[in-house]
View (tube, rainbow, N blue to C red):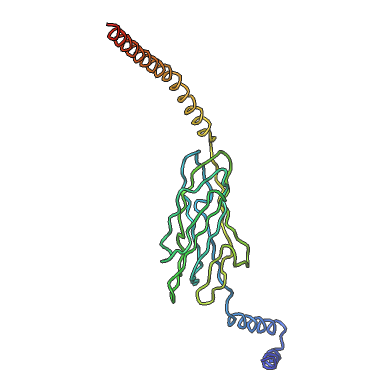
Length: 235
């Protein structure tokens, strides 16, 4: 191959022509080389927004595939600000026929969703992996972030069909603004406590008076009965 290429170049005395032929030869080599793996991405949609405390927001976990890609499965692992957001529900998408994992923890602030294709089949188009409904918990800026490191297979990943190589190259995280403050617990506790105290203050004396009246009534009957027996015996 090298000898042939050198002979071909020497057929052209012009340096410019030699350079042109060399470029064509090198370009041909690259055209015959298999192209690198195309990119896949996981995205949150919308990637931002505003919600009030106790208000809900729907966020989709989307898979984006370049033309020509096909995948056998996706793992999406995320963390969210558990102090400002909480997950209400996770609804699996229709991108894959099977979802072996679809869980979340409001205590830890984590989400995990996995979808896989049927044996021998694959997914060759992007779509919605899952839909997450968040509820605002406390005011401030709350982030929702994919657990992703390029080259790692123990976090979020996209498995290429046939090879199971990780195709995930990029992610789009989310940042959401929660407005208002979480005061429901404080006001609720105060209201319940005050109501109980008020009811107890008005109810207990009434119950006490009824018991006292009953005791006095029974005592009177007892004294009356003893007196009657005493008079009968004396007679």
